[in-house]
Image (tube, rainbow, N blue to C red; front, side):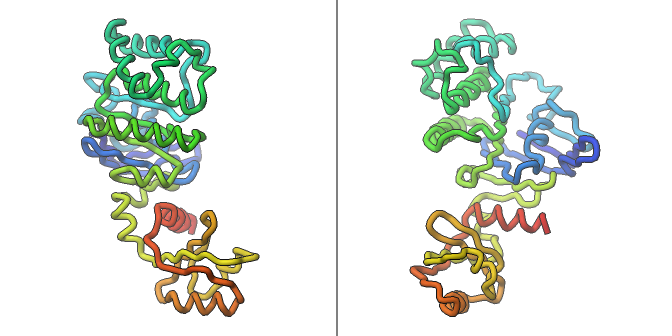
Length: 300
């Protein structure tokens, strides 16, 4: 459905994307994750035909984006809300549908169907500027869906949106995916990466790892411990023998161990530092653990 082969793009001296190969199969939800400035948005814009690659090829449904027989087969939702604030919800949808030369009857029929899914029907006559952040994102999604695309590409659609609205947004995406839609989505949230069927980690313009969330966890090469303890200085954990990395998660810490370290060695080291340990156990690595590890490797 989506295929990039050796795609690269530079802006002056900055190499935004470097020889990226990415293949998104039919009805997958593929997540693009990576640090800010990693190249996610540039890659998405090349996939949508908005930016021309310096090298490599992009194929959507087997052809270059600009050669799609039906442009409406590709739906795109940009990172920033880009609709018209001084138009109502329905006026925005009418305008977007007209750009794709849909007749008014078709637009109205599809709009009612999608607004029902997104729970925006009560707000059809509200100006876009008067919508909440989550509702604006739902309106942008509605506009990108009015053409009934086979492929939906979204660039950090839930960035800055409250947790409940994010959950609702993903419920909608899952429903669309079950109906056959292929989805490519970039996200800064690792809990959203968990919801994808495949995750591509991109950093410094290169895809450095791609697999299912479960596959990424199973292949993570380090042991991760979860620690609950009374600590005055969290920096102490970074200095413990056998600890490769340590970071804070809510009311607990994650410790990534060096290959030869054991749980008992870490426990003894904590006791020697007079740390009161409430619990210390091996856990399955989270997507956050994998993200931090891959990002640090790229920095090194």
